[in-house]
Image (cartoon, rainbow, N blue to C red; front, side, top):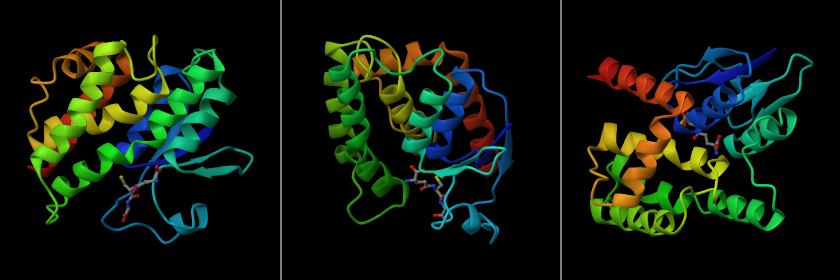
Length: 198
Ligand SMILES: N[C@@H](CCC(=O)N[C@@H](CS)C(=O)NCC(=O)O)C(=O)O
């Protein structure tokens, strides 16, 4: 059995929850209070961040991107990466460039001086352009690049009151993803997180 050191509100942990749900992998979630992280979490990961995945045999892995790829290789069905190696590289490139969205998102979320809704909308427009050319951030099929981005899109809407509807291709992508059980589950969880904080 796998154990996931998890936090409902964490978008990085959401990436891993979505992959686990897409592949129907059973796991034991251990909810970590991010405002009062237990000291033992540092034994699992030197930086003390969630998510952390632990195998029964003691193998422990941190970093959401690495965990997503590990799970996709360890549980190959259904695959969340394209077959073609060039397309796989493009998925990794999209995930590598995630900070282009993460930076303006966290500026707004943490009310930093650099924060601007325009900055975030510029990045949403870039994603919108990509999704105007292909149905998914992962290419022709849904996969890890979509999973890597969608937690922040959902949180931008639910927690930062960002209206993504002017970005029509992005909004249509979000709606398509919301039809998947793994994503619908995250939307429901996010509703509970927002209600608990209100
Ligand atoms: N690069 C890490 C980032 C994980 C991360 O930032 N997790 C946050 C929660 S969303 C965390 O554990 N924060 C605890 C803290 O900063 O005190 C990943 O991709 O897994």
